[in-house]
Amino acid sequence: MTPADVSTSPTTDTPGGALRTAGQPALVPPALEGNLSDCVLDWARQDPAATCLSHKTADGRWADVSAEQFCATVRAVAKGLLAAGVRPGDRVGIMSRTRYEWTVVDAACWFAGAVGVPVYETSSAEQITWILSDSGAVGCVVETAAHAATVAAVRAGLPALRRTWTIEDGGLEELAAAGRDVGDDALEAARTSAGPTSTATIVYTSGSTGRPKGCVLTHGNFLDLARNSRAALPEVLGAPGASTLLFIPLAHVLARFVEVLCLSSRIPMGFAPDTRQLAADLQGFRPTFVLAVPRVFHKVHAGAQQKAAAAGRFRAAVFTRAEATAVAYSRALDAGGPGVLLRVRHAVFDRLVYAKLRDAMGGRLAHAVSGGASLGEHLGHFFRGVGVTVLEGWGLTETAAPACVNRPGSQRIGTVGLPMPGTEVAIAEDGEILCRGIGVFREYLGREEETAAVFADGWFRTGDIGELEETGHLRITGRKKEILVTAAGKNVAPAPLEDRLRAHPLVSQCLVVGDARPFVGCLVTLDADALEVWGRNHGAPGLTPAAAVDHPLVRAELQRAVDSANELVSRAESIRAFRVLAEDFTVDNDCLTPSLKMRRAEALRRFAADVEAIYAGGGSA
Image 1 (tube, rainbow, N blue to C red):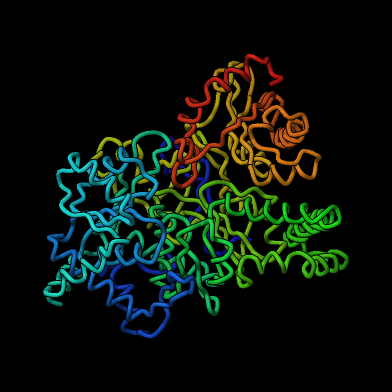
Image 2: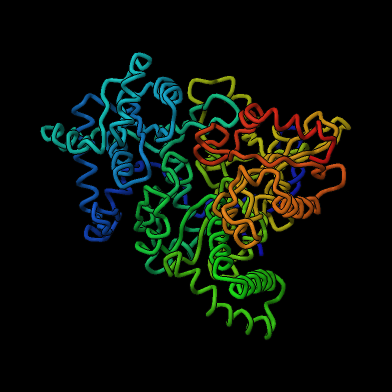
């Protein structure tokens, strides 16, 4: 299951002495010259008519953009940036949903020698002020008039900011018009001013544990990682007709990496700005692979389950058996292959269930990459059994996204895969994952002490806890800062319990608590859509999260989910009590980051009374 060039070995060449390392040499030599703009320019020169990007028009049609057209648009906008006084090395904020124009502005920054600084379009005024002021942005491209108004309202706190352009108010056309008098020679001088070691972007951490820090990532980080990823995943990225649909925020480093990966690998990509239309966009664009956070896969699974339940008991029973067969079939692939009866049963359910599910995802989707949190083994096996292989990976903003990823030919479900080519990971004595290699960032902008604190002997301390299997596959077991220590001194990793609970269709989010407490408890929020269908099928139509907080049938169902999660751990680590919340953890209430990671401190503060109620109940809440 391990490629021959992935090595694992004990080592002492790490801070404090690591127990084990795994790594793979780079498959593609490092970039010694050039920058990210070359990806756009080379594609336009060598295959100008090829479809490069696609976006939806106002009437809902998909419009293709050729490599030549994209390059011309990017050059025009880049000239506009130069005309506006943006100089090589200057920072330009980009605040928008994931859409075609985002990538235009990003690439225009590369051509102008500027540094793009992504800002989540859901950011508050305070967050916008911090990111634009800390980065020293001289300009900012926003999507809507509302975004522009927010930036204008905090302008006094942004002394370096000179201009703001609004996409939906013709901002890119304004830039292109302003740059008409900028010569090609001036643009080429700006474009070639950056090399592999130059700063390509400053991506701010999601701020789940405090004020965001600007991660300085270079052109070489992205170029080397993209080229080696292409070599490592030929089944996904080299498949005939390969394409992807981007729908997670381009402000997130993983989507940004995939943007670069597609441009450098010449893979067409579409954009889905509104995730509420994701199902229709998947069917309209029909990608061969997608990138998503685990919650998307949970939603797809829950939606299929709900649809079957709404169609009656017979359809619900068929789906239940189909799901069990898909999981059994996938597990058998890892154990010598499925037997004759299982293959026959799988073929029957493929016609009845799996094909329809694949059609709902566009009909061509063969692979998906999942990151940001654990998918869970059950869903991993379910989707592979259905015919869509979900490859879990792991990385951080500080690693320019993927440090490890599963490969189709060496997948171990439940792990985040093998180190990427040119990357090495190690497990320190305390279980912390260390990383070094081509994607690791240079520094936190303007924070020498904080940068020094996360590097030791050339290794980046990731803050994640994990284990390396003999095959070199990495398994994530938690976050170093999230380990709970009960009053009895028992160390508890919340992640495995939370991952298992979130796999239940009724559960939207959960937060395991118990630090300095007599036992482990949990806050649980409910998925409103799944709850409505579940309630209708259990004699409680119209059931809402607020009404379900103390509903005996709901509590009994959740108790079964808790009991299942507790099977993963010892009695001392098990959830002894849980409390159902009427309100979900969301980006709007600051309990989730824009990339959907839990802000544990904020959630604990906001729901402090509910945590106290768990322990006031003495373990029976």
